[in-house]
Length: 196
Image: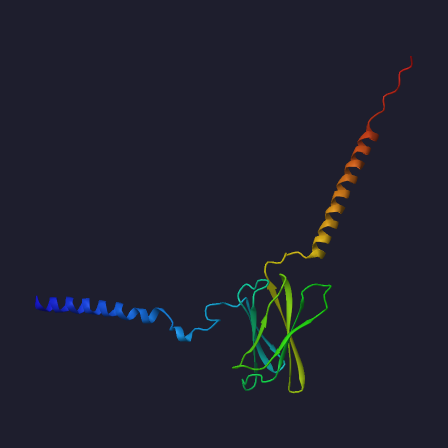
């Protein structure tokens, strides 16, 4: 009887102590949080270009017009893993067939192995971000897409093509109906006019 009481007391103590320490396992200490800790990127691009392995991320997850966002750009040498240590220039242009005009977002220097470029877009749409740098006497340029807001899935060119296709289909249907009516009327025997 005495052993069962001790065992029961041991179980209760073990359960209470487990609950007391559980709060340390569930969370992260607040000193390890920064502006990106709870914000997923809208995209994460990893690629190899020349002698470098490049990663680009855009924050926040869903950039909106007139709201600040940022690009994080990492580049490390493939042979030794050392981070790129030169200026990186960021440019942007519309992702459309008729837009060749680029605008410079800025040029950044290395900050704790990361190049950080801020941005604010006035209009929603699809854009192409270009990161450019020179390393080992060679120029590098990396393009990656970015959507701001909820742009139309079909641009002005797609809308124009859709209207033209709709007009052609309508004309085709109307012409087919006319030909069918004309054929039916020509196949009917004409009634002879009875003499008086």
